[in-house]
Structure formats: structure tokens, C-alpha cells
Image (tube, rainbow, N blue to C red; front, side, top):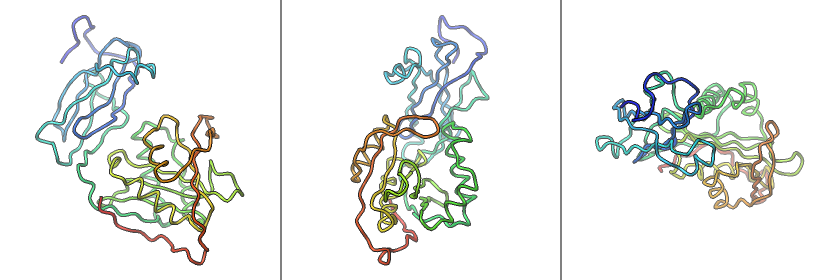
Amino acid sequence: MHARPGEPEGLLQGRVEGYLEGVGETVTGWAWLPDHPARRLRVTVLFDGHPVTTFADRHRDDLKAAGKGDGCCGFAVPVPDAFAGREHKVDVRLPDFPDLRLRGAPRTTIPMLGPVILRRVPPGEAVRLHAFLAGLAGLHGAGEAAVPDMAAVQAWLAAPDRCWLTAERAGAIVGHCRVGPDWPAEPREGALALGIELHPDVQGFGLGRHLMQAAHRWAAGWCARVELAVLPHNDRARRLYRSLGYADSGMVRLPVTGEPHCHMAIALPAIAPAARCPFVGCVLVV
């Protein structure tokens, strides 16, 4: 594919924005060149290395509302029949920018999650956990500031008043959830904060719910309630939290950036510390 009629030929220059959003029956995302907002970029989706090329020219109201030109920069590529129903790698290339990689790529399409192990991370696995956190931040295009430093991870894992859980599939970490004294929970108010993140490849299987329920079981007896903060536009996460019993508690701002977040909380049953069972792990088949 080359430039469309009326568009200039030749090597493009400038800063590209874009994201690989979804994989599965259809691969979706967007790509946009702010310096040439009317130019529709070519996109090549690789299914286990097999290329399918199209244009990022689909109109989306959300992209227009986000300031991405006229909003005509989305793409959607159906998975070829040869890859339907089986696990495969998905990557994206921009032929006009061969050295660039879209945020959110590469990914893996997972039709069936299979056995997943939930376990508490021991202090000796700080390096492994930190590597997962760094890889997840890199996948989303976040900088180093988005990743806690190694000393902070080690300190968290060594402290008795907090818990860090991982979800593991085929020997690899695919999600994590931690509970402890942190923002947005205020000190000395009988609450602990919860943070959770899944690799996008395993979202949609109910794994986040299982992780949070395991974290709640650990936290019962340590605190009266668990609090969290979520971005206002993350409707999917907010629906999950509400279904688990979380209630809205107004808005809070991230201390570092001031970005507004929805503050949510759930009350936990009172359990005597002596009756608490330490979380050692479980196996899920999802």
C-alpha cells in the first residue's frame, strides 16, 4: 500500500501517536501523525509474523474527543481464519516508520486462560516482580517514574503489615494485587489501600475479581476497610469494584501529578487476628 490519492508520497517524519488496544477476534487500535493530521497511516498487523496491512482511517468519536484530529485514525483487522481460536502473537508495524513500535504492543491472543496460580510473593522474588512491573509500564509507554524502585519493592515484600499477590500462568506473572498502608488510605484511620493491575492479554477472564477477593481475605483482620483510587474514565474497572461491594467516596488527587481519581472503599468483616489464615496460594482454572 502507498499513499492514498491526494496524499504526499515519500518518507514521513514527525512524532507518531498510537496504541494497540485489543486483540482477539479483531485487532483494534489507532495511529496518528500530529504533524500531518489528515494523513492516514499505514498499519501492518503481524499474526505470528503473518502480515496484514491496512490504513488507520476508521472514524471514532472517542479519538476525536481526545483531540486526535478528526478522529479518523482507528484501525480494526479481523483475525485471519488460520489463527482463529488458537493462541498466537500479535504485533503492529507502521511501514512509514519502520523503527517505531506502538504502545501496547506486542500482545498475545489467549482464547482460553487455563490454570492460573495466585500466590503471595516472598521477599526473595523482588527482582522477578520488579521485572514484571517494569515490563508492564513499558508496554503502556510509561516512563521509569511509573515503576517503584527495587528498594521500595523489597521493603514492601519484607513488611508484615502488607501483602503482594501475583497471578501466574505457565510460569509467568500476568497480574498483581497489593494491599497495605498507602495512598489513598489515610494513616491511622483503620484502612489499607489496594492496587491491582493485569497484563492486557489476560483481561476479561475474571482474574481481577479473584485477585481482589484473595486480597480481601488477607486484609480481613488487619483493617476495617480497603480503599482504592481509579481513573474516572475507567468504567470497566469501576463496574468490577462496585460488583465486589465498593462504594464511591468522592474524588482524590494523585499526590505526584494532581490527576483526579475516583475514591472507592469496601468494609471488611471483623476477624480476630488469631483466627486469620495466612494466604499461601491457590490454583484457579479459568
